[in-house]
Image 1: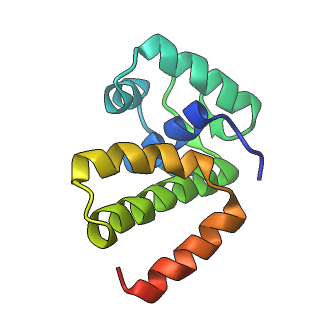
Image 2 (image 1 turned 45 degrees about the vertical axis):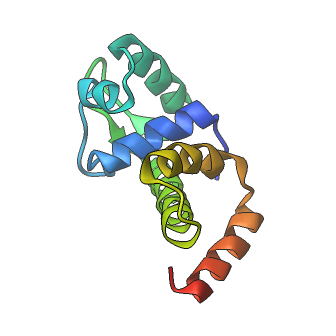
Image 3 (image 1 turned 180 degrees about the vertical axis):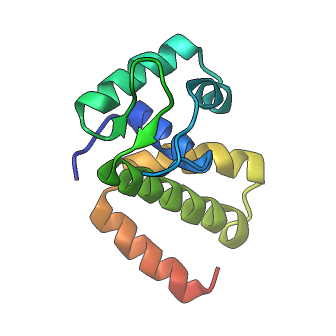
Amino acid sequence: MVKTSMSHEDYLEAIVMLGGTTEVPVRSVDVANKLGVSKASVNKAISALKEQALVIQPHYGDITLTDEGYAYGSSVLGRHRMLFDFLTKAVGIPPEVAEEEACQMEHAISDASFEKWEAFVKGLDV
């Protein structure tokens, strides 16, 4: 899988969170609202994601994920959810703090380390 920037990973994750798939498009304005950014920022990020073949968007149309884009966005979201659950349930970090820290951690941890962490957490039954 092509690796993209942390910012672009956030866009893919947001699209998946909004219900976007390879079949179901989302609107740019909804992505902007979800991430708290301008529509111009969304358009710039989507242009970069189109170049990486992670999204499809006709000229100023709705955004649809490619197969690879959906897999990537779903993976980032899955990491976020597991890290959030671990931080809140196993460590006892308040949800608002855990949300921010999970968002940072989901981008920084390697795939190999995440797989080991995930196996460890599954063993904890968190």
